[in-house]
Length: 96
Image (cartoon, rainbow, N blue to C red; front, top):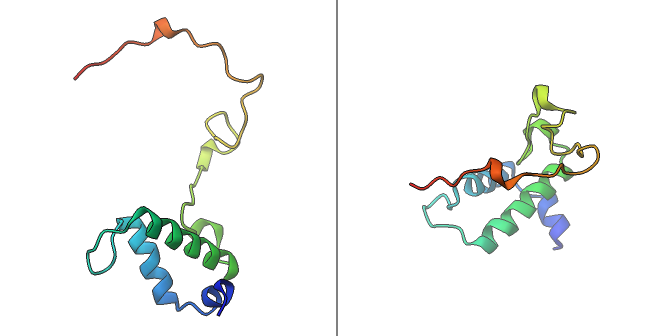
């Protein structure tokens, strides 16, 4: 069975469990996920969502930009003229 076939036949409950495990960073039985397990699980979830046409706003990692969409606060919008010169004297070091 190929990876694509596996994802195509993935049970929706398993998909939800993978999403939840990624959110919490641990498996349903409480064991912590390794970085590799998180990466593989996230890849499977994203692939599943694309394959099953899950609406964009319901997908893992979706950010609702709301009123900020299309403004300078939207990271998908490039600043005109590149980054402005930043004066390091405007910043102070905060020590706790």
